[in-house]
Length: 114
Image (cartoon, rainbow, N blue to C red):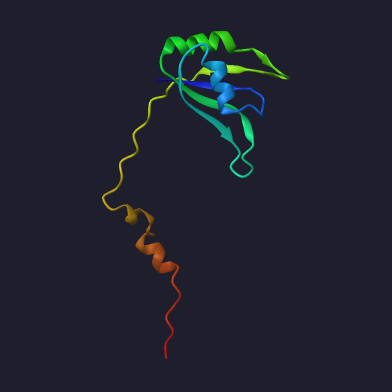
């Protein structure tokens, strides 16, 4: 699977319209148009996964820089970056949040005597 970034398309374009346009150059397997969480309005860019690299390169060559309405289409292959492993955790993760003993004693209120 090859990931594509597609940006600069009109905000009223649907997933189906975008897939029809890119499917002419290669087979699209998934699509995700990025939308605002509250208003659900399209932000003007999407991510697609294509079946093979040749189809993705054909789509980039054919569609990158194409004017659509008052906008210019931007199509790029999204290169995968290596995932960094998480740093090792301490034996008991909750201990890392405790204050050192000397500092904890200084911040306590003095006891009341009766």
